[in-house]
Structures are given as structure tokens and as C-alpha cells.
Length: 270
Image (cartoon, rainbow, N blue to C red; front, side, top):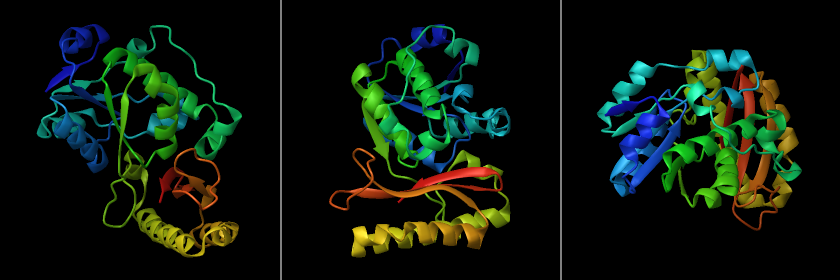
């Protein structure tokens, strides 16, 4: 695996490769990332993985500082997966050139965009820069960060004429969606998160049986979860898969949740 840290070196290395898949990450490589890499490897001649903890998408400096990092471990895992290229740039290199700034419409300021001011503007900014640099026609991203996936499709897929390949959420045995942030959780909180995940799966199942009437019960279940597990839920909502509008139960939909436990913010969808 070639480790590349500068845009100049990257341009020299991959400029002649057209059939290359791109997997953007912030490190902390886990089985979720591995599934994206393997999806790329089945379709593409070569795969490039980026590791860049983007400062502009963090709402709090402390959150950015404590975000789990272990580049040596990540490199070892990527080498075992036979990844051809790792792009690990500095913030100076990524942000040294001018690029379009993104502003979300009011209709997009829902879910995490409502509770994390500026977060997705930062995500779109850095993805715009990374896609400008790497120029891959196939991007691989997970469905756990579904709103992120939706916004990147909306704002960037046409601009770069890129296919956004979405891959299913990977869960560990206790039903928690894999996330680098899970490393910040205490043992007891992992158990709680597992129980919460099972409870939310049951809610989704019941909604399929009862439809729109069941949606009226969500405030009750939200309060019940908060009291039982001593957590703070930012949102618990049924939304349409295609446009993220509040669901009318006449099209495909998901149950979206975000909550804080151990001062760690977890998101998921079912």
C-alpha cells in the first residue's frame, strides 16, 4: 500500500487511473469501513481510502480533540485488506485552495443538521475538496450516516458525475451500529446502547403493522427511553428514504435517532 500525504504526490500517482474507487473516512477503521472497501474492490481495479479528521465539521473543539485516532493501527488494517492507496493529508493541504461554500436550505436543516449547527456545511466543504482532488467516479459510503449520504448525493453527485454507492449499516452482535465513536463508550453504556437498538428495531417493526397511527406514539417512546436509560434524545422521527420528509407511510421510510450517552453522541436509523 502506498501512503500519500500531499495533493501533489497524489496527482502524480493516480492521474492515469480511471477505474478507482474512493472510500472517505476519518480513521478508526472498523468492519463498517471494511465493508465499503470490499464493495469497492469487487467493482474497481484499485481503491483509495482517505483518512482525514475534518475540523470544520465538529461543533465543539473538545469533540474534535477527543475523536479517536490511531493511524498506525489503521495502516496495518488497510494493508491487510490490500488497499492500494491511503491518502492522509494535513488540514493545511486540504484547505489551501479556494472552493465553493455550501449553505443548507431550511428544508435540509432537520435531524442532525438541526442539532449540529454547521456540521453538514463542514462535511460538504471537505467532501467537495476531496472529490476535487481524487476525481474518482465511484464513492463508497455507509447508510449509518444516512443524512450525510443524502446531502452528498444532493449537492455533489451531479457536480462530479460520481456514483454514490451506499452500503448497509454494519452492526456488532449487540445490534449497535459500528462507529469510531463507540470506542469512547464505557462498558455499561455499550450494554445500554444495545438495549436501545433492540427497542428501536421493535418500534420500526410495529410501525409497519400499524402505520401512521403508530407515529403518534413516538413522543411517548422517546420519553420512555430517556427516563429508562438516562439519556438525552435529540430526535426520534420517521422520515422518507428518498427525500427525508416526515413520512406518510405510503413510501419507504426509516426511523432516525440521535442521542447522547456518556457524553458521546450516537446516531442510527432503522
